[in-house]
Image (tube, rainbow, N blue to C red; front, side, top):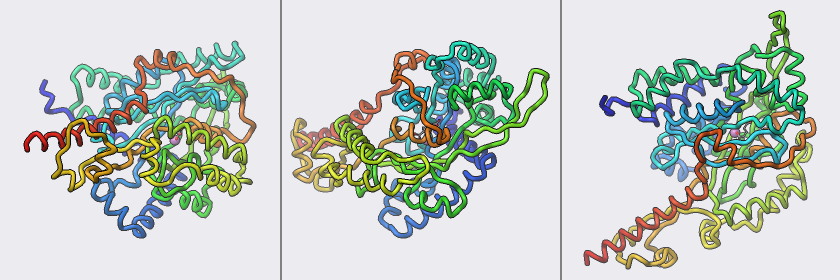
Length: 466
Ligand code: OOG
Ligand code: NI
């Protein structure tokens, strides 16, 4: 079969994220409201900042500014995770990063399936933050065994999704007709089920062990629990949410608002309580509720080096020693102030961030550089100092464990967080996944190194031609 008839994995991913968005807006009307606020705020921000508008226009992303950037699911078994990896691979999404959330009282560990590489990110950056439940952290052995038994019985993928994934693997891609079918079949895995797998008593026991365990074990599949568009002014959307009748989480996660944006800022509206029915042994349905689904927004800045990340982590910890954000939002203003003050030591110009080795940059030739020549081993410092290369921040495409924990917590209800011993187990996660995850720092360092090598090669080629 000729590979020419295959559609690109990027276009399958685009179709998938558009289908998810449409499904989620229908299922969760508050999410539609959030999207409306985001579109409005983004339009106003662009109108007030023609420079930003021009830059986005040039990079060809203006039309898609307000589209979804990520979503999240929570899986129950190693087999589900391994199959999910194969499904995402068809869409050009690969596991990047390992996040241990046990430390934050959430019994899961996670990765993000995302496009890697510039071209793919530009086409459509949609990622799925994917968590695997850790029943090994549940003390009650009887309950653990029961949860395992329930999970082992479910099949979260349709027969069609499995067949088409295998076909894509065999052929090296899917043609247009199959790609459309694939998106439709895969969407089923992410759909909400308002009829639980378990009876009300079992739901209660799972819920008492941890709300997240009930969310994963009680249902037929790993319903998408949020989607996240990009906003150009996160503080403004956070401020506007109550005016539109939706309740934001107490604070924006991540760094404070700055001139030079770093890493990732995110916030959400609180998960909604939804009607669900539970089936008892006699087969009758009982009414109940479940709280899981919400909407989130994000805004991204530069990817930090390990040194920059260590400084970020330290300053964030410092700020939280001063003010710990309360779930009810009562000290939100004090927290914002403490955060802004704690981050004063983090330089707020690209030149300083680069000088101090805190962030990753992509280098490219200036007009002057295009006419210059230099020996191949000229240091990047000299090229910058001579005005031969530009440096632009590389955008952080991954997640932050403390922020993710904040997002999880604010949607698990305001009851006191449960304690688990911190027990990262990346080896176990990768064994269950069936592959290792890409290390995000190595990845950004590689992009930077590649851009430097290209500049040097170009300057040396000019020299050789002289
Ligand atoms: C995932 C929470 C993490 C983020 O943006 O950090 C996340 C979840 O609640 O399942 O999506
Ligand atoms: Ni999220």
